[in-house]
Image 1 (cartoon, rainbow, N blue to C red):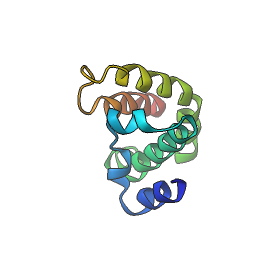
Image 2 (tube, one colour; image 1 turned 120 degrees about the horizontal axis):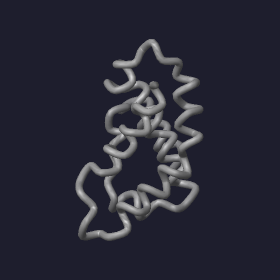
Image 3 (tube, rainbow, N blue to C red; image 1 turned 60 degrees about the vertical axis):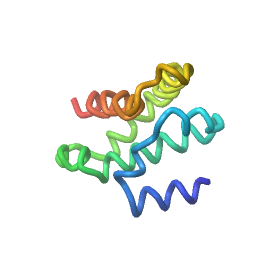
Image 4 (spheres, one colour; image 1 turned 135 degrees about the horizontal axis):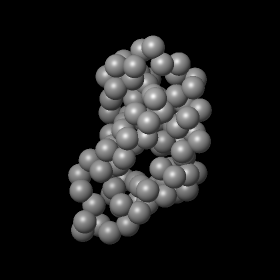
Length: 103
């Protein structure tokens, strides 16, 4: 799985950031951490990251790493109820954290 995630990041950086609750709920604990790493790389290499070309990608990765458990907890929380999790909510939450690391 890790190889598949890394290949996805290398060849499809925008798709690497897209994850929905059904997929998130199926991930094991260690896979969630790997998925967040893939999302980070996807954002840094995709259109979102290009908007912040003056930002140091190493610092962005460190910042997001500091928030990793918070992100996992928030994703788990919003995805807990299958009936109420809106489409795109994981990306919205991740985007907020990503942008907070720019400042």
